[in-house]
Length: 156
Image (cartoon, rainbow, N blue to C red; front, side, top):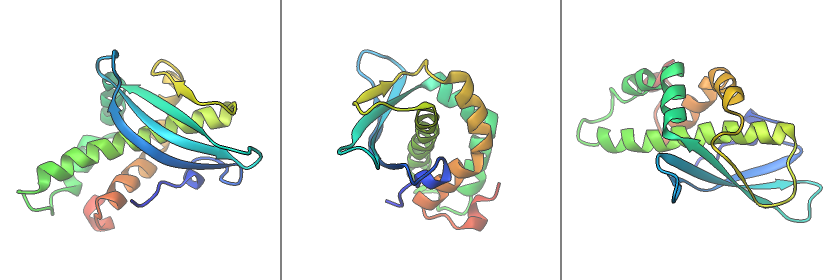
C-alpha cells in the first residue's frame, strides 16, 4: 500500500500515523463506517488507536460537494470495462480512508490524549466539510496513487 503521509495534513514531526484497518461497517450503527488508525506522538512511549467514524450521509455529501463522482468517472475512463467496477468499489473505500484521515487530522490539531479512542461521526462535522473542500487534491491523489492511475488518467 502506498501509505498516506501525515505530512500532507499536519506537522509530521509530532505524529506518526498509519492506517490500521477500514473502512468497515460499525455494528449497531447502521450506515456508519469506521476507519482505525495507529497514532504515535514522538513524546509518547507507545501509540494509540483512533477509530474515525463517518456516516454514509456525510461521505455522500462531501463526495458530491467536492465532485468526487465526476473525478472518478473521468479517472476510470481508461480502465478496461470488465475491471472498472472493482476499481470503482476500491476507489470508494480509498475515498473514505482519505476522508477519515482528514477528520483524524482535525483531532490531532485540536489535541489528542494518549488513549485509544473513537472519533464519533457527530464530531467535527462542520469542520470536516470545510477541510474536505481544501483537501480535495489530497483525497483524489491518494485514490489515484493507490489504484495506480497515471496523473493524466485522474485529472481534476
